[in-house]
Length: 159
Image 1: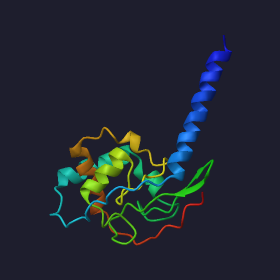
Image 2: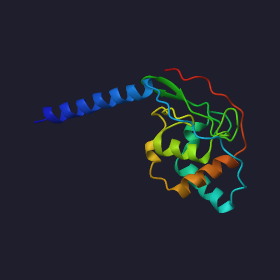
Image 3: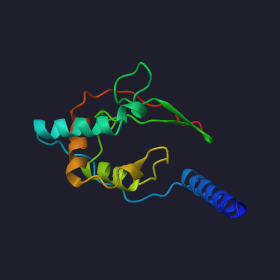
């Protein structure tokens, strides 16, 4: 009796690892969304809600290197396939989210796709954000856009 659940568990594990390998190994491209445009300053209630969501989502834990600037990326995340490096979430135009549009940010949270349409690595838990309302995504976006831009390029992933 115990052998059947173990077989199912092993089959699910193997299938999951194969899927993970396929997602990590294959980069699918979709049309890139247009770059961000400058918006009016966000309202304080929206910014406060965004900061609350960022704390609840623990964004800083992955997107802040030890001793680094908050949300500026650079933290290495170890996986069985090698190290991933978390991205810069500050509004820096060259190394962060500065050229992203709100639509591209929402697509990253809901679909796990980068600004240019590539699949994001599965270490980014976008599946945890798929049910965020449009209002909550807008609040989180406003909070990140209000951060001081930090120019910090990431080292490449070591996969």
